[in-house]
Each structure stands twice: as structure tokens, then as C-alpha cells.
Image 1 (cartoon, rainbow, N blue to C red):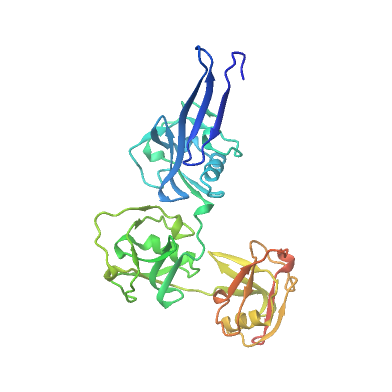
Image 2: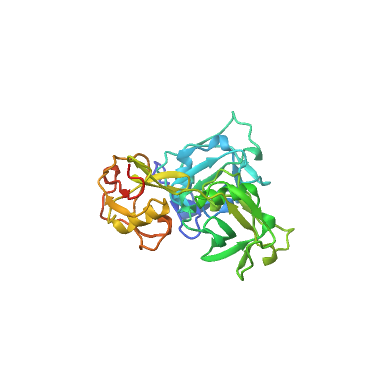
Length: 356
């Protein structure tokens, strides 16, 4: 309330995500409530949680200049979209350009605001912005676990399928290229791509078809983080199912022992080696590791960083193997809730092969 009796408040509407500025006007004979709908925010050209950033201002969607947007602003947008934390802020029109007006006011979020339009702004005079500077955003809510697979070959080769809206879909060979293959092979921990195969090289299956053009740069960690655009020129059927052959590689290793068959267990996940938490780690899991490394039978399954603590990330799910599994990655897992996993709890294995 100011000295003239005018009360101004900014608050969110939940459905849809529009924001309104309200005030009471006492200047006339009757008190009037005036509501101005100000804005909305969205990401376009990727997924629900990734894409080119656009802001609705005065009933016009506007792209945002990458020079006026930073990590703190990204925190707010991802939160506003219910998409978790920001993973990456991308400039230089990473998600394709669009013929919209440009938002060039500098956004000055602290990072704890609930909506981008609650952040202060200031006029930007020093930046020359065009659609070559459209800012893009990837939020963590985009991350999809086990949402891509290769079928009909081996773990690292087969017909490509993508999980979309809880449905597995084959991919049209016309919308998939070598850069997309780099991302899929990396996501599956299968090394580099060896060959991209069209014309249903791995047999056809009666699934829905993914026909959006995938536009990976090649450095993304997941295919779902790549921009997509709707193709208009392809007539795709299951005769066009794309297949992929990746190089494959060892996904488990033993570190810190006296031979390659004894040591701290580390697994390769999305390009990074991780130690394994020793919660419920026993001889069943050890048998699978020894088998995968061609190291004979398990002698002991050890915990408590027996081979010294590792570094970096930790695989914190409890691994649930049966003795018949051939690789640790094929074992099931459940989320650990009441167990403190740290590098003092790194698991290890001693196998019978090459003990010394």
C-alpha cells in the first residue's frame, strides 16, 4: 500500500502458467480492480524441459538474447517449468532459430525466484542481439533413465527404439545420422558408433514410428537432450527402421588390487567411471563381476573400501544380481534410502583368476 492507497501485488496463476499484476484504483468514484496478464515462459524445439527459451510479453512470444541470460536465470526458468535444476545454458541458437521478436532486457534473477517475471530487468544497450543469439536451455527434468535401447542384435547393436510417452518407438532412418549415433552409443555405455544402418537391417517390428528429425550436436549425454523438429518431407514406414552398431567396451573394472582380477569395483555409466556402494554386496554380485571380466570364480566380496577409497561419483543403487547374469549392468537394482554411501563404503571383489 502506498501513500495514495494503491496496492500492487504480483502473483502466479497455476493453470495455465500466466502471471498477473493487480492493483486497486481508487481514483474514480468506484474502486476498480485492474488485472494485467503479463507473461508466460516456455522452451521450444526440444522437449518439455529443453529447448529455445521464449517469454510471452504483451501477448507476443519473444526469443531471449543469450547475452542477457545466465545460470541464475536458468535456475528460475527450470523451477518455473517444474523441470528440476538447469543442466546447460546454450547460446548461438542451439535449438534452431525462429522468426520472433527478441527480448533484449537484461534479466537479473537472484536464482531463488519462483517465476522469471519476478526477476528484476534492466534495459540492455550494449548487446547487439539477433536470432543467431537465441538462448537455449536444458533442465534436469529432461533426463530420462533407460529411455533408449537397441533391439534384435546385442546390448550394443540392433534396431533403435526410443521411449516416448511410455511407448517404445522405432526411428525412421531419414531422421537419424552419425552425430545422433554418437549420443546413443554414449548413453548406452557402448563406446563409439561403428555403423548406422537403414532399411530395417535388424528386422522390422510393429511399433509406432518416431518421425521427428533428431538434431544432436554429438556431445549430449542422452538422445532426449537433443533438439528435434517435425519433418515434412519423409514418408517413413518400418522398412525404414534405423539400426545401429556401437563399438562396445568393458563396462566394469577392478582397481587397486595386485592383478586385473582383484580390486575396487568400478562401473562405466554414461562415460564416467563410478565406484559401487557396498550395501548388500555379496558373493552373487562378485560372481557376475568375475564372469564378466573372465577372471574365474569369486573368492571374496569385500566392502568398506578394502582396496582403498575411490574418487568421483558413486553408484548408489543396491545391485541385485542372480548368479546367471553375465554382466553387472544386466543385474537389477533398487534405490538405497537408509544407507550412507560414500567412498569409505566402496565395494571390491577378489576373483580366482590371476591372483598374483
